[in-house]
Image (tube, rainbow over all chains, first blue to last red; front, side, top):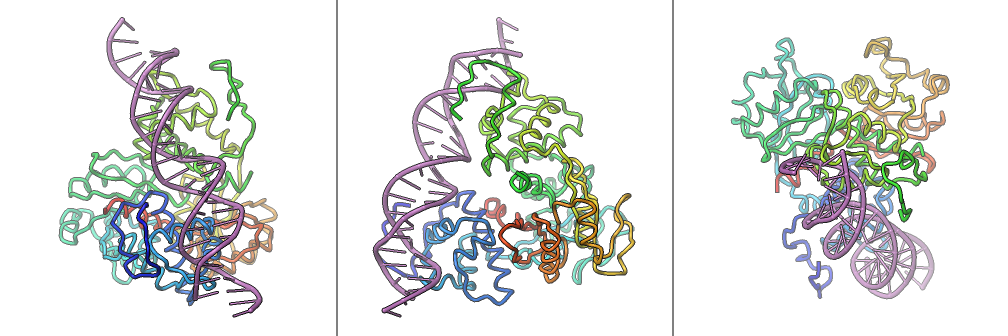
Length: 223
Length: 223
DNA sequence: TAGATTGTTAATCGATTAACAATC
DNA sequence: TAGATTGTTAATCGATTAACAATC
């Protein structure tokens, strides 16, 4: 970033060349966004970099640095306006639009994910939930979602313009679902099972589990 | 690390001074461990740094570098023995022992976490699950676990030597449970709700959600 | 041996932090 | 004004990567 900025506080500051964010910056911005979203729900109007630091465990200088790279969003002596910071970060992360996702597996994890607020909070819409267990098909999961038969996968993916498949199925079943998603043209798979999925290079798999963090975090907490 | 090592392949290499790992190294080692554990289940005996790289999205040179910092675990031309690498990493992360954890909330997320293999795989034992909903008390969650009444929290934490509290409760209920855990002396809280918890400085809160990753990962996948 | 893969170097790049003037 | 907090600098530290000799 060697672009010399001779003006101060200009609105033009928010229109930077769309460089790809580094992995670390994007991860931290997402984290700030999560905290800000919650802070907003709690009725907080402004927040300081120190408060954000307390909640995210990211150094407060780092936070100010991350943000100031995109514009002067704060007020000295006051902090950041929660509402405006949320929309600024959304702009930076380009998560302003709506994205449709499909959920596989109507077990406990699938239902937990389906009923989480966090997707709606960030512009993601769970438009379908599938299960191979025919006794579950037709069950209502949330107000708007009903478990669909796995036979309709292909049709639903095309009709509903689904860009992400989220796997909350048993480890043994994950590869088969991944194969079907790939065949239907889905390029992004979120894998909450423990399976090591084999997919073609153009498809991205992100594996994550509600429990893996524990291992890593505990190293620091127990030593 | 400026310790000059004149010998090769010695067993003494695994006994390094117990420096605290950097955050990044610990996170990556945990990830390797997760993949290795699964690879072992699938009957794999050796694994190359390139295969580990494919599954973890960590550069293969980085992986070899991370591991070689603690000893010469691999065989040139062959790769790493899965079994022995698992135990080496466990030694490094000091997760060889057993740690008892308590789970709060017997809803979908709580049950999903309780029935996950991943805790058992890494030496954690869910020894209790609580819920304030009296209609859930007594229900069987897994073979060994039955939902307990929240009134017994304090007693159970002391009797069962619980070091970690895992919160899978609604956002509104999270702070109350955190307060009670702090009062009972628990120093590590894993928060799967969206609440921004207030705790004394000696207590560590790790907030995480099965859905937050999506936001960050999607930035890269959609751009 | 021939092929494969580790262990390690060297060079680069980005992350982190303390400190403090600017300013609300 | 006085206190608080941002924006930014400068200096350090650790992460990342390509490349390749060592060696299984």
